Length: 346
Image 1 (cartoon, rainbow, N blue to C red):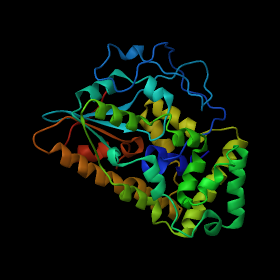
Image 2: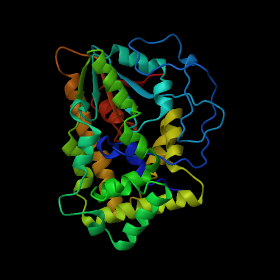
Image 3: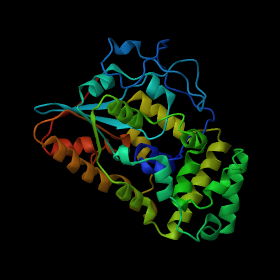
């Protein structure tokens, strides 16, 4: 089955994952060792051994009895003061905050500044949802074909979220499409009860009086989807509904499968599945791939290099969506092409 990019965006952009989530049909986690201890993420000092790390089983995904051990996509960037590049994901998962590796805790401990995709001091779920709202006078019922609108409403009823559907009425079509792709986290994200790992790192940095900053602006992220035509946004939503229907029929959770590859920390399989979400024969997919990944990789790489060249040298922890790091045009490859030493941290 092809994993469509509606779930892929959780590995790419902060703003568009404001109320996103995954579904919980039958998914097997990678087989790993079991452990009983749990350590909070972003401790201000590294712990003794990565072998003691463990994670709790999140309620939103049905897992076997084995506990998944997370191997983060973490890289060391050489320099007068080595910095770090971490591939994150922009939705909550208990396994990421209850079971960090020593390598990530060590990178956070060393970091003098934590740099996320967006400057999270100036970004909030409420503000992001405001940016994703339709202009006055427009609504889903006015922007969508009636058949698509009725189909969308039926999904919310099926998930017992019919009371939440009126809140979606004035959300932009592309934003609703992303939320359909990751529906089961909507209540969690809106309640604020759990935070994505990049937000946890940022908040811990603030508590320890470390510097924080961002690589992009909300407007830059928003424009990736906001400039899609009305027809493109409608097709984007319809494909999200198609994908969800197929997953339900096949008792499959595409996002949770991607999440398990992310947790396993194997670059090639994760990249293959992320790339499989795009059909390069389709103009809409071509446009989104260029805007979501190619263009933003170059911009973020240039801004990372600019920070690394700032005097006096400073230790940075750059936390960006995991999909931005991988592949020939990923940030890791681009940094190497600029003559920098970048190595995976075990």
